[in-house]
Length: 368
Image 1: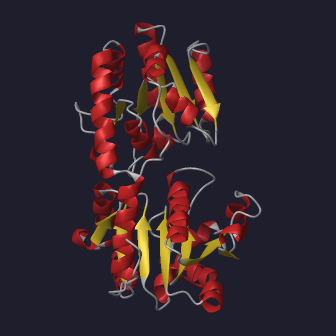
Image 2: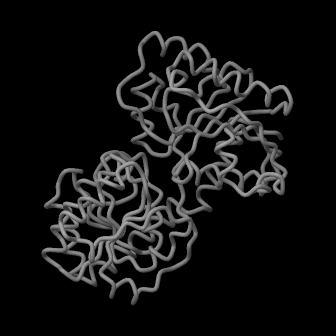
């Protein structure tokens, strides 16, 4: 079986993690694989990363702004995929999408397609666009989303019946276990993610300020960078929190930060699922997060962590302080979170689910 992967991902983040998981799965199942990448995406990897895995790479141009529009996207994607379609002659295509509304040009090729949504859209497609695209959504095109919330929004956005969208949850990274004594003694509140408006750094620094005023020995750490890094640095300086709040920038190795974390905090404005939350849960770290998107499908409020609306600064702060003051509660929520993560979001569960999806769309006899 030969499969072509057409992925959308940044230098780091959930979509890239998913792409790497797909490559590992293909290698384990001996699926002959090719990928379509921009030069920038290819250069984010070691020079021999793909060749030593026997993965063919086809280079496509970076998508200009106009080709994010639905009609132009069809043409861009079709011609981006055409060389691989001709030269690699795949049996199917896996589209890993981070921007709903683009990458549908793959449907113009007469192949089985698995189309995976990693983020949920805002608003709806125009009716003319929905009708046009529906003409290409054959029985051999299967849609999947990384959470029920994402599937629901995609259904509203594109008019695809919700029941026809498979749920393919992300998995946590198998880091191992944290040292319980170290994380209990540090009073570190950890956040990982791209420093963008979506991750809500404005609320994050307000919560950090409130918690540190109440519990001065607490530290807040954000691992990641992005367009709002300068804004957050200015806020930290303006609030005189330099000795209690730190921005660590992008780090390829994040496990050491989890190992020292007492609480994981994610006040996002929108979140399709959130792999960092899954990682924290799997490591037994209680989570405080926004009740948006697919987060509530991971965190059970009051059982594995606490959920609040994205603007509830007081609620976030109270939950964090409550956890800082209650070691037994932290341990209880951490245990329940780890159990839930292993039951629903483990790498083994993800592998089993992707095998089932592949069988249904590509009719591949994969090893059990």
